[in-house]
Structures are given as structure tokens and as C-alpha cells.
Image (tube, rainbow, N blue to C red):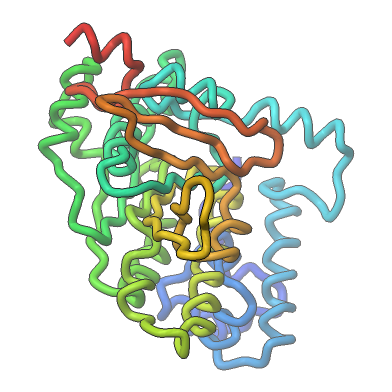
Length: 327
């Protein structure tokens, strides 16, 4: 068991009192917090050159390896497989959707749900906030959730209804969900940097960003700002990826869609964020309406085949169609 003092940034070789105080002032006390930052962000934060920031990052990674919290530079494929088999998952509330995802929302991964309004993105997020609190024998993690709301769509009343239908105390469920309302991209990035504190102190194992692209789209307008937007978005998404891997949590983001005007055949709907978003997401699921039901299609995954399934939205949140027809 690693003691909390051992994870203090002052224990990193090469980090002196001045650097330590700068990290403390930025709210970074834990070595794992530091590793969620990229070298560019770290160099800007500390006022040091890029090479120095890379050196600090490498020393931080080395320290976590010594403490047994991170693997070495290389690992046997057999060991990687053994680790993959032990990764936990969170039920979505629908057996169909869980099966599509290989058992549910995967820890240590970034899962993206995209689709038009009303396709079920936010309902999935609300349901996951409750199902993550279920015990492991019920396909939960017995843990809390952090929810960054950028579109003012989080509704605690919905949490109450879902919790009641899943035999969880609504009051207790609400006390294990930590909601941050982001007002712009800078605030969204600030809230994201604070997430690690809730993971450590409150035992959260699920991070939700609903939606990741809202402020980026509204603040960076026109082709002239596209390069700056994509660069900043890339940095932000990689922060989420590192957060998932270092803290062993599940990260779920929702994304908006737009129509591709050059599409003459097939579905013209495309997720926002371009290739940056596509390359950063571990799993990418496209949601669309189908009458009272919803169709989820897995369009990008390291190992899943491209496939789709049907689920529905009920008082208990996300469910299978046959469950919804009984209500």
C-alpha cells in the first residue's frame, strides 16, 4: 500500500523547493496529477523550457514505476493481456448496449457517445452516474462520479428517478455525484484539472463531460480559428486520456454532430471535432433515434467489430426495449 506522502511531488528527483511551490500554487500536490499534464502545459505552468518539463515528466513516471503504480517502459504481451482481462466495466443499464461494448463502459478508456439532440447521450450519462454506484456483483463499481456539465442539461431529479428504480437511495446517490458547471473552455479545463482531487478524496471512478465540444465550437468561430481550436482541443482530450489511464477511471464524453455538405449518399451526420476527436477516443458510439427506441452503433474501437444494437429510454434510465415495453 502506497502512503499518501510518497506521492507528493516534492519526492520527484530534480524537483526543488521553487518548483514544488509553483506546483502547489497550481493545486498540484500528487505526482499523478502532474502526469495528467503534457510537457507544453507543464513548461507554461512552471515557466521552464520544454526539455526541462519533459525531464520532470519522465522523472515523475519513473517514481510511479518505483512505487508500483505504473509499469515499466515495455511489458510482455501476455502481461498486457492479463491486465486487460482484469479491467473493470460499468453497466449502462441495457444488456444490449453492454454486450455491444464488451461488458459495459471500460475503465482506463475514453468512451465517446455522439448523435443528434434527443438521441440519448445525456440519458446515458445520468444512468451511468447511478449504475457506477451499484456493487460489483451488479456490474457497478461501488463508486462515485464527477460530472462536468457544459450545456446545462444535468438534472438531479432524473438521478432520483433512476436511483429509485434501481433500488439505490436517491439521497445517497446524489451525495456521490459531483457536478461542475463549465461556462467556457478555460473554465472547463480548470474543472478538469480539479477532477483528480475528487477521484482520490471521494472515491470517484467515473468522469463524464457532457458535452466536450460545446464551448470549443461556440468560442472558436470561423476557419481562421480552426487551427487554434484543434490544438487546444487535442491538448484537452489527451488530458482526459491520461486521467483515465493514470487513475484507472472510466471517462465518458458526449459529442455534438454536424451535417457534411459533401455527402451525397448515406448518412451525412458527422461528429464534431474532426480527426482530433476521432483519434483521441478509445471507443466511439454513434446514437440515433428509431421511433421510441434508440440505435447505438460502435464505429471505432481497438478490438470490437463494427456492429449496432437497440436500447430504449425509460423511467429507470437506459434499458432494453423489452423492459421499456413493460412500463
